[in-house]
Length: 584
Image 1: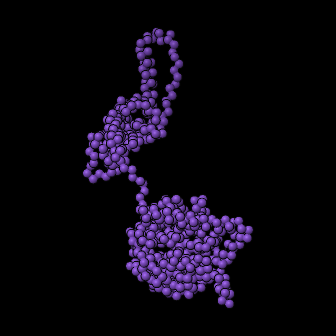
Image 2 (image 1 turned 180 degrees about the vertical axis):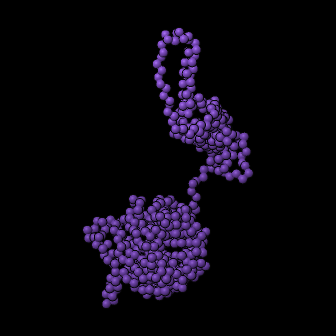
């Protein structure tokens, strides 16, 4: 409601005032007009005055309060919003340094708000954050530049270059790699600052000094061979081994040609007969070998004696086939690890953890002691000529010894971990070593070179054996497999998943190599066909881990020794029948 508007009550009060005004007008007309003119004056018709109907009284309404009119106050200006600083995000290799929330905002570091003259102001905290980001970016670019620089790896060259650049050659407690990293960062800093001239000058000085030294020492510099020069005895031994191996190889090849060309020779029938013999192996004899677990065994060349060794350090010689004790070989101060008969006589060699190998006669007299290894010995083997002895040791080497003089002819390195197994080729030209580095190596004894590295096993290789055919090699490993290697193809030709535990020893049948025998820590020994590598016979009987085995020359007996302290002799039934027929 407006201020000057009247309410209904005030309008009803104004009606009687109009009637009073009409009566006054008539009185004035009567007084002003003469009587003579009254008759000529037309008298207007006067309508009867109807008194207005007075409505019932209405109680007056309470007037509404008057709202004072106020002038609206002007609105306060909007507060200035500080910009939100975002860390630079890498997009497609580019660094974004814009402070705006929009990608299309092209305003500078300071901009105005619509309708306001306020500008963006970067706070001190935001400025510090931006400086840290820029510093981190500079450091990253510096590291990238440093990684692309060529820095010498020789510590002497690093020191020389630092000195030429005017920096200290070394800091307190600084190592070689730290010194090289310091030189790298220094070179990157000089490159970033554009001081390439100083850097190039240092390069030129370094090259000039190196060239001068090279010219001075070129005439006086001695040409050292990459190998160790051997002794005269080793040279003579290599010549002797070469002559022996040529004769043996010729005999082997002649025998192979005769079998191939003779129409009466049936190789498959011969193999079938040998495998049939192997299938009939049974336990013939069992004997307690020593007070402690046995570790090695070996047949003599004529098959009449069997030698065993144990953890007591003593070795024993037994008669065949009754396994009666003949002599005891005592002399080692630590446990014995292996024993081997000479291929030309009945002399016995033993290896021990006391770092020595010893040569004995069958009566038990000590003939030679071979000293030189720096750690305990593992397996040993005689060269087919009978003149040399090979020993494998945990000092990561194997050595060749002269039987006659007892001197060390060859110290051969090549394995990264301990050497465990060793074996010689039937011709005498090659030697094979196996080690705890899961590797087997073949060495040429005539030249001293490693001609093959047989990689395939995933755990230490404990046993190695050459086949009489001259080109097959068997290895037994802790990965429970026996691998057959072809030396002609220089690769593994078959993998036999032989046992459920590690294979401690592997041997070919020594006459023709028609079958392979493996010993394992699963308390069994197994016979495998060398034609198709299928299982032929499982020799079960030991109550503990089988440590070693050997096969007699004619393949009719197999001896196994185990940690249950027993020697078990396995023989063929057909061989027993033949002996019985001979007696009759």
